[in-house]
Picture 1 (tube, rainbow, N blue to C red):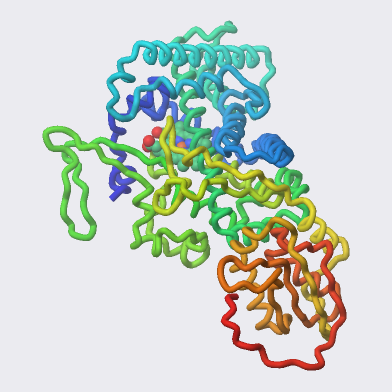
Picture 2: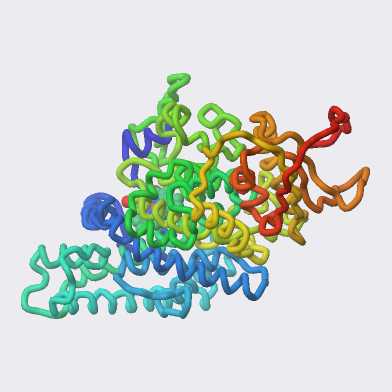
Length: 562
Ligand code: HEM
């Protein structure tokens, strides 16, 4: 049905969008319609072509590296923090370059344009009916003040870029939105013998479109990045598999990823599981949609019953298209609350109902920034998830919506409740990278087979990991069942501080007897287990001792949980 309003027909946006004009101005493509919308949408299209976006890769990597520095600062101070302000600063730095060819460096310093954007939502009209706020003279005055300030500051950037062009300082491949607008201005003969923009209509259109793209292009991606960290925390098996894919495509050392991605930007799009995880996260947590207006003579046709529903009777009906419920329709997404990236892989992706998945909306007014946003998310994940362990710090009694404490809260745009509180992040330098790097240097691979011997493996847990061990144990157990079935593991089990009959068992390590041709081969197989990659076992001090079973009783039925 949504496709009927956006793709088969492109119904006009609802007058409710007037509310957005407080943030993005009156002339932005977000709120305008007809010829004006069509004209400007076309002007900015080249700024989002795949070829052009690939050229932005180094810029995005550079800004994500600053984001990493910010995370490292939190590792150092050991303090809990909120993720959303960090991801917002990151995406503002990216969109500042994309829209205005400006390097705001918001992650490290303040900037007038960014400050005005951040403050403005405080003064836009309230969503609910709140007459005191609605008619408050202070609110009205402040809203006007910051709107004018934004227009003035962005106008100064447009003038400056225009002067740079006239001085021959801008290359032909420059496709930031301000330059695309100025290209059009020049092509229309608006720049003859002058260093000043003389057409006020052009200028206000350029300013409001930059305002619109800046707004739409940072808050959405920033919130989506937060939800990605949230789901990766909540589903350790997904994180584990994602890290494996990154290792496979981007190399063993996470420190090399930036250079690797810059050398071959297209590699990111070839990582199927990464794309599937992002898509599944957007399926469940996208906070955007569209609101269209009914039109005389246009009826919705229910494909199941063939009943036609008018969209106009004594006036237009508002038509709300929200991906939140659409993406939870069990007919199109079986077991819809389950986080299941596999939906977007192989056969299942191919058989997905057409138009059921629409985080960026569809049709002529779909999101022009969708590829940029996907690219930002892929790069940020690639550069961070093997470097850090990021855990949520929602209190036990935090309110939940549909089981999640990270539900959407609306400010000027939707974002996770409490801005996604994070426990102090941990850097994952030691264990994983060291073990993997050593293995790589030694040229190990899993095909090293030969005559096997028995090995007794003794592994202590690292201190302070009990809660994480318990959480990710199901993934570890699944792996060990497979290793047992393959004949590698003879027997294995956890070691406790003491035996307890109830509550969380006090795990302190693991022990096992395995069959392998060499100590190297034992290491090579075990270091892929999530207890190594996630730093649960003290892998640097693993003991692998030659062993021989002489006497053995069959395993007793203890009722132990795997
Ligand atoms: C995860 C990130 C994003 C999501 C989920 C998202 C989603 C959407 C959706 C659902 C729409 C339709 C809105 C409506 O009809 O009211 C839209 C429109 C739009 N988006 Fe995005 N977006 C994202 C990122 C971006 C980025 C990075 C940019 C800019 C570079 C951007 C710029 C725009 C613009 C300008 C429109 C209006 C298009 C038009 O009406 O022709 N978005 N987006």
